[in-house]
Length: 193
Image 1: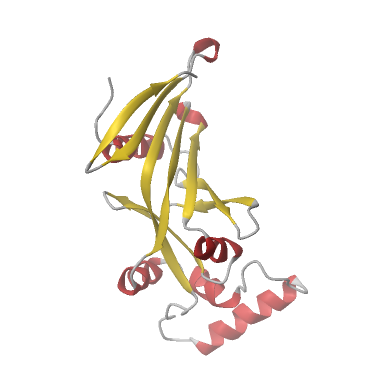
Image 2: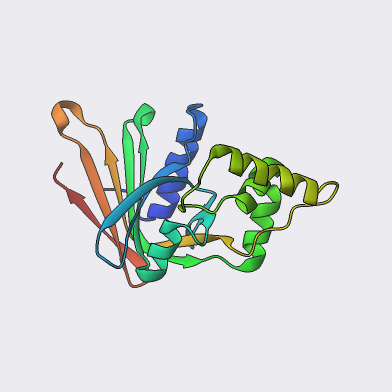
């Protein structure tokens, strides 16, 4: 019927998406729900995936991080138009470790590191010039030395409890296969389009 390991299946499809040369094949839609029960979506970038789950990074004071702190249930959706495929993941987000966050932060381009310090993500900004000035001040502060990871910036790993693979079909007879975590394995169900 289908590959029994959805994480391996995801990796194979992700490699295909990267091989197409499309821009940002690691872009995904992250959905969270705040304390008031209202859903919120935004696009983030996948920065790692393995048998433990899917990793993205953010400012821990952002709306998404605050909502995850209130309700760790999230969903992720990849849409690869070039492959005519989507992958929808439901699971629980948990913080990555400090060492893992430090290691990833060190790989970011220096302007992105400075931007992480300067941005008070999701909060009001009076003018764009204020943000640019803050980045310039940080550049001067860290001139000639590495930029450390801000204490308010880290990552989340989403441990999936369900992964659905969608492939486009003729006359909208799409192929949908749902994997749901069951003990140490996965229950596999084919769904109507």
